[in-house]
Image (cartoon, rainbow, N blue to C red; front, side):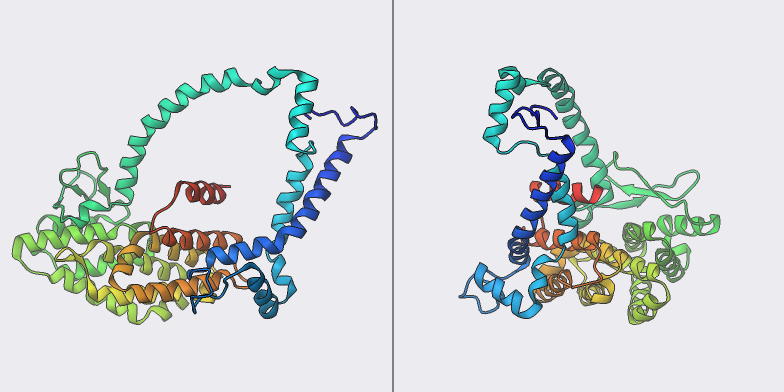
Length: 396
């Protein structure tokens, strides 16, 4: 162990004994602080202010919260999630070989001298220069990639989207953004590719209701395609409007979306993947389609209803549905709240209550729900600290 000799004080203490002692210390500490940790998380999840003056606030103080949790859920509630936390504490305690910070500094100084505090400085300094250079170099490239995957401004400001036909498959891009990768439709058969190419180039020459059904059908089967199908639909709508001033495709698309919406429970029972793809698709359409540069009011309540369904206990027990719920709220949550803030409040009450489910919620689902709660609380933005915490946890 660096900077510490377990036999330096004259006792014959093995490394194993030191590790065991640290582990036991971590275990006991975690047992003692777990109730405070539970109360802290409840405070973080509460949307209302922590104040007695707020009648809707469930918790408004440490002692009051402790009494209420004890009364409603029993003493074991203070140790929910205790086992994974214990594993972390035991592992951490096992490798902590110093008594205190002061003890560590004094011991290292006495045994190895002042230069011990600068061990590894040279490789660190050498690494700083390429690290900083790569950071700024990759930032621009990653920014362009993110804007392609999650476009925000171009579609909302009425950017003109036109077909750009490739040699082997249908592709198109936002005009004025030549660096953005063209969207490829390689998963369709040759006949369908030709149908879509024609719809983008000469919409009056094809049956646009059939085109709408083809896109919806494929979106229900392919979750990757459903995430970006809205861009294609927007391109066809723009092309039809420019060519004939009509909205046959838009009407056919909305009619089909309504049919699937009315049968959403049957769809979910029949195919969980199809249901998740449908929610992704309708949210994507809501994100892209505009009337006078505003989201379509006709889609607001159907989108909310789908998200409410994803926030029910039986859906929160399935990671696919939790993942879909969080992704769609990241994408359209802010827009939805502007259209109907009351329903968003009600949705997050469900999400908060779902997070506190006694059983059935995986660790990943809990992490995702906590992240979206904090994301909304921060004004639909991810703070640097939250990004570092949540995304490092998910990648781990």
